[in-house]
Image (tube, rainbow, N blue to C red):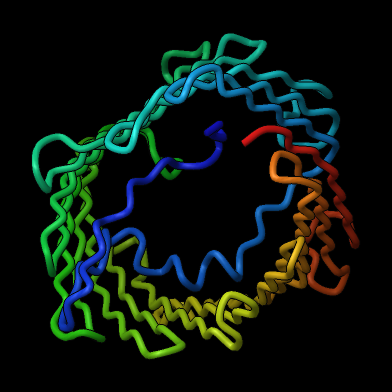
Length: 314
């Protein structure tokens, strides 16, 4: 039952076995089929993660990280966390050695309404990060209201709303608007998702203030072998400036392990391996390499990062 602080807790929408349009999920997760394949969760150094259920609804988590650049202020990092929840509501909170408190609360509010609260309280009050979402999960649609502060590297309060509608069993359309209250400035995104028998494709267009060029994002994921092999690719293009980036990856689910490989246009190659030792123990291996020919000016010609981890507990 132990949860990770870096992983956002989610409650999946109820499945409907009837034929026809189904709930397409929240707008912010339309690209998930592709992005979970092309973006590896790499890390550097050595980390240990131990989870211990104390009761059926309560568990504690200890995380110890040695080395790496994720926490540049120290070469070691410790975090203690606790999870309390059932099938309807989940609450997670953690505190590290510097007093930074993180937390997530996800659960049903009333009927099809679901709420989500995410916060990060560092020692510097000005760096506070908070997100509050209210989701309505209908039978064929999803809508969300969002209030957030200091997100995506932009300080200030953000107000947002989104809506996704399943038009047919395979086609879903949606849109999202985010307002930066301090600027004020607004960003609008529209998206289309088509789901086939063994593949899914997403296209979205984002337009913001005049100083920020519009961006087209395309994603494609294909299941080559059910529950075994999945391929994915993603392309982002800003037509006004000609800037573009792409990434492609593959995910392999083996009998006792899971392998994720990814490469992008910047010359970065990533790989993650998760090996199951027992129902309560996993070994993690991570590697990331950036080739010199694609290095940015002022950065090392070649860079290598390796990580090793052990997870104990359910």
